[in-house]
Length: 478
Image (cartoon, rainbow, N blue to C red; front, side, top):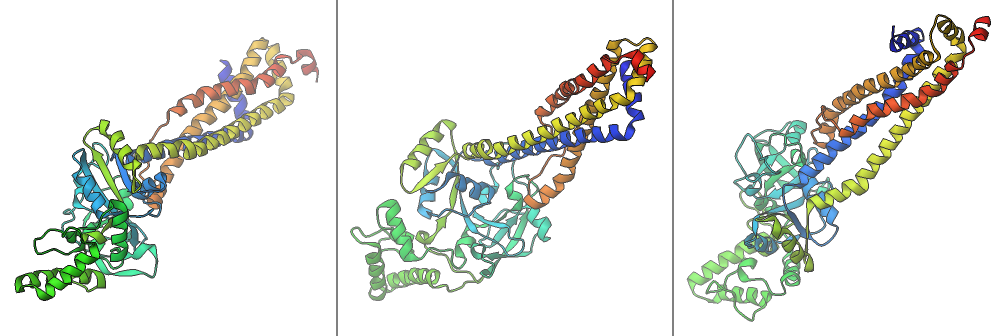
């Protein structure tokens, strides 16, 4: 009979006390495993979500806020960029993909974020090696919508359903216009699952989404240092080109006079263009109840997702944009890494330290439990010594008891911790839209059990010394 078998028999005699002591260790280890696995999963998900594009271009402001708003949709937009700025990025020969985002609204049911974008967003990989998959066509008409899997499940929506939008998240400011669901995305494990995507043209046509013309012209001048072209105002000269030396207001006035006094063909063409512009400005509704097409100068984008043709060009483009006063370019991976290391990482460290302290306290409770049992077991130890057991054997039995309690509690804690992650996974998915792998494993778990063996040795040393020094004759006499 070896020392571990004897130690097991001894613990079995004190089953209740031993079980409670081992349970305290198991709970501490379970908490630590849960913290480690969930943090590793969150880090992987955040890094994965941010790795689909090389740069995010948006208005000047907080870089982290721009990333959180654009990629994770958990913050309010900083400001907007003129539509022409997006067009310039798209025409840059160094840029492979430039996808506009227009943000700010939410769904009336469920409060899910709305993203106005182009059909191209669904044709490129949202993370390397992974593409969107859905059960319907892409965005093809201005009032089409594609919804994420979590949105569909929570709201019970499917293809053909109508969606109402709340302007700027204000509960009582609901747009009259509705979007029609044309596709439901398969789960991606990213913020796309909790997002409703609409065609950006339809987003611009909603009441209040076009920038007032006067403000748009002034912002255009600030950005580009020149007056907008007639075609951007929804106007055209007789030659179809801007008149040099005229301001935007002068061109608009010139075109207005031309429509009244020119020949019939010119008058009809310019009158129709002016009528379309006035419809965009004054809110006359079209077939779907939306504003008609609005001039480009009144269109804005919240951010632009950029994928560059070569990674060596990323620093160059980023520096060029950041040197200007109009916009900023942000590397999403860099910002998320900063967030994880400086904020989330500190929380994780604090949580691990706290759970480690819980495990240490559990170890101390094992020490107290075994040490207090020594006075009751003095006669038992004396009998073993009288039957031929050496001091080392007795010392080894006490160490074996502490090892069984620590190691056994640790194994139970690892199983319990992963069980807690398994139970929490659907709750986290339902509340946040993030998919959690219940079988995820963190490499730090590999050092938990060796650390518990060390703790068992330290915990069992003092009771073992007490047993080692037991006076056989005195213990038998008592």
